[in-house]
Amino acid sequence: MLLKVHSCGVCRTDLHIVEGELTEPKLPLILGHQIVGTVVELGPKASESTDALPETDAPRVEPGVRVGVPWLGWTDGTCPYCLSGRENLCDQARFTGYDIGGGYAEYAVADARYCFPIPEGYPDLQAAPLLCAGLIGYRALRLAGDGRRLGIYGFGAAAHILVQVARHQGRTTYAFTRPGDDEGQRFALRMGAHWAGGSLDVPPEPLDAAIILAPVGDLVPQALRQVAKGGVVVCGGIHMSDIPSFPYQILWEERMVRSVANLTRKDGHEFLRLAPQIPVGTRVRAFPLEEANEALDELRAGRIEGAAVLMVDEEATSAWATSGRGPWSPGGR
Image (cartoon, rainbow, N blue to C red; front, side):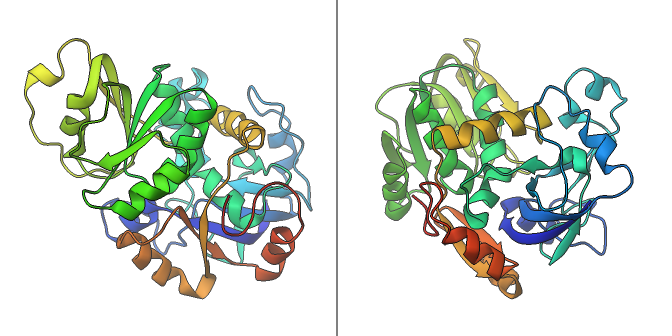
């Protein structure tokens, strides 16, 4: 279906693509996989594809409906992974802003099966980070298990959403930033973290699980040293620098290291139902579409507090931001 783009989040994955760390993009390519837009027109198969969304109660998509487009943009639906509820691992999967043209544009085309209705009350700018930062954080939290003491390494777009979900679930969260990043640690505490320190610091108590959101392989052994017996370390990024060798002693006693790959539509519908119940607030810094390169530069330099979002249709975005619906404002919570 054809979408008129209102806003599009800027993700670290976009940086990995631009810098050649993800090596097989469709070229030429329009980046962007956190798209918020309005359905303009349905293709001939769009209606039938939205009649059979697995394990969801998603409403039928039609022109005029506001939807979000995530990273996972298409799967074959027939492989063993798809048929076993693991469509995020489909060998033929295509990804928005990588294999499929994305949202750094005024219009985008998306598979109706892989679009999510945006929760009522979220302005366009605040909704965009939910579609990757929120979804990947939510899946990483699920894979981290039910432990109460959760460490989060790398406090950016995903972490500032994840900490709110974890707190809602009654977990105690410990935020780890770059050493010396006092501002980032204060931001983590404002967003609900119980404790914040540098990545080399020792938290006040052992962790049941840790989620690594920074693309830094050195953090894996650091996190393993802080998790208790039977603890889990979840690597949430699509790309990470090499993990250094580490002694077996810090893995022993049934500690586990695992990765998160993409998302499923079930993840998306679950999280987008949950977000307004908490409610999850997103802190955003907005850039006009023509400043997309500046937004990427600011993200690369670590100067974004929360999430960067491109304003594509500024008239539509402004209308939602001033509508007064919901507890979200252009500056976040």
